Amino acid sequence: MLTTAKVALVLMALLVPVAKFLGVLEPEGEPQYTSDGQMKFPEHYREWVYLSSGFDMSYSSEGSGMADHHMFDNTFVNPEAYKVFVATGHWPDKTVIVLESRMAKGRGSINQKGNYQDEQIMGVSIHVRDDARFPGKWAFFGFDGGQTGKMIPTTATCYSCHQDHGAVDSTFVQFYPTLLPIAKAKETLAARYLKEIMAPEEKEPL
Image (tube, rainbow, N blue to C red):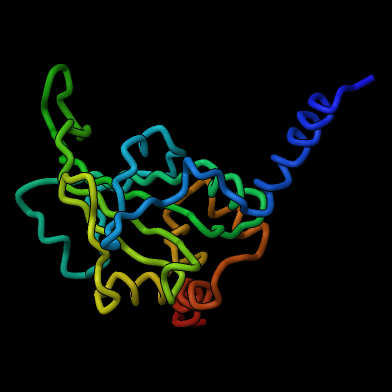
């Protein structure tokens, strides 16, 4: 017969997958804050799920303003949030998305063409969902190499830009090639995004 301890272990093994599916995240991947409201830097974010990389991306038609150098942007998300997105097509509470910017290098070692990422990190910003903490559920934090980062004011354009153009839950899932098909299949793409991508087709002459 099973002992009480063994029964408890079996029940726990059965409940953990359900909790993950429902978006109940483990504390290890949750955002952490200081007493004055700053966010603690997630030191092990590069062990999280890699979503995609951008190269010299700019949301302005006038260019990126980085004529003297090139840049890679790498995006990571905490594993538990990723699992919930795969299951539901939505980001759960306590999602942490890290955008890491690194300098691009051209020639070096045996490389003669193209670009590769330098060890130098130019900046890190975080997009975090915390329903109980932020009135709009989502907030941005900027880090300049320290162990904590200040919240970017909600008047910054990053908030309105993500709200107006984000494919899912005000996030740029349209730039994550492994997640966009999931959002399409689960029909969780934002109405504004769908209207935006349809607009060029509507303008084409018959």
